[in-house]
Each structure stands twice: as C-alpha cells, then as structure tokens.
Length: 277
Image (cartoon, rainbow, N blue to C red; front, side, top):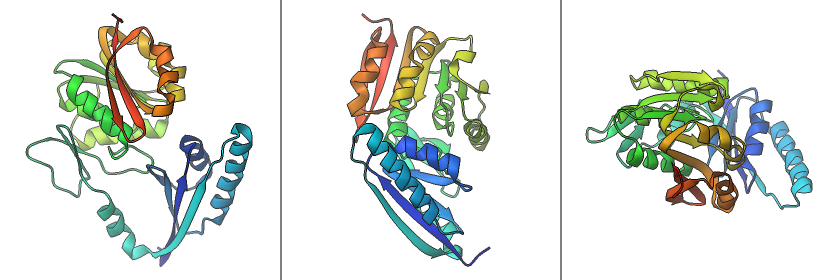
C-alpha cells in the first residue's frame, strides 16, 4: 500500500446521471455518489479525470444551451487514515420504521434493521429519493404482498419490503447492481423470491406493489412495462424524479390515480394506484 492516496471531490450543478455514466465508463476504480456530485479516491493523481469531466461539461453546455457548473477539490491524504475517516462519515439513518446502518454500527432494538455496508455508487438510504421510497414502502407494503423492485441497485428497497413480510422479486439491467443486491440480502439474512439481470418486461407475473427508484427519463421510457406488471388496484411507487420533471413524468401515467406525493429537497416520489377514478 502506498503511503498516500488522492481524494477528488466533485460538485456538479446539473446532469449528474450523465457525469456518473462517464465516470463509470472511464475510471479504473469505484467512486462514491453524493447529493450534488461524486468523491473519487485513487493512489494516482486525478488530473486527467478532471480534464475529461471539463470536456464533457463543455459538450453538454453546447448541446443543451445551459450553464453547467463543475467544482473540483483534490486532496492528498494518508492511506492509514482512510478506513476510519470513511467509516466515521457513514452515519446510521432512521427512516420511518426502518433503521439503516452499516455493519460496524449496532442495530436498533425498536426498529426494523437494515444493514447496508456502503458500496461505491449504490444506495444506502442517504439520498432523498431512496429515503422517500422507503417511507412509501413503510406505508403501503403489507404482509403477504407481492412486490417488484425495478432497478434494485443496492437492494435496500427490496430488503425493506421483505422485512415487512412481502414476497419480493427484483431486477436491474446492471450486473454489478444485481450482485450487490444479492450480497445485501445475505447480509440481512433474507432472500428475494426472484432476482434477475434485465428489465421488468422479462417477468410474466403481476404485483401488488411495484417500486422504481430511477431517473425521470427512464421512468418515462419504461412506463408501459411498469404499468403492465401492476395488479388491478395495485400500487406503483415512482421515485428519483426532480420536481422540475414531475409533470413530464406524470403525462405517461395519466391512467393511474395519484394517492400521495412525497417531497424531499428538490426530489419527489409519487404513489400511484392502478385504475384511475
């Protein structure tokens, strides 16, 4: 192990999913997502990555006509400090009846515990979209429900539904997400009924509750697939939507009734019901 490593903190004013895709395709190491950007840690300096992100920012500005701000801060740190600093930065969360904690912190005797060791670029409940989806699951998922978690990521939403007594299937188009979801079910001593790599269109089943915590454009693109797997009078939980895109998304779900809207920061989560009144 080298004596030092480099930490690059990146803040972006918009288009975070596009920058995330660029980093996933470019970096030989993992990275951590934050509310407004990313943190990259590497034994090598990260000047080339900063240059690449600047080139992408300029291309996006030309394509969209928007002003996109990027902020970088690169720091040289001692490797011996890394594990403690990282663990200290991950705090347990209480979200409704759930207590989300890393394995190095003790569970809560009075809540439903979900152990998630943060994996880079996977959900831990800290992002508003995940937190809102967990609140919706706590309220609408009942014992014995058939639940489908679409775009399962870390598997945290599916694990939450299982711990409420539901029978849960999950899918993601990313192999790494499927693998991470499987690891987190094992960490929590629970099991998905079915877990597959690919879209929800691959299932022939229908569900009492379908949850999709994905970006707005994808929720639009797969709207018909999502609606087709919800049972009559079933519930559809849509999360990952910026407030400015909510009307754009809802146009594709006009045949569903809006039961509830959960807002946190600039993000919204909709709970919809099959069969509009």
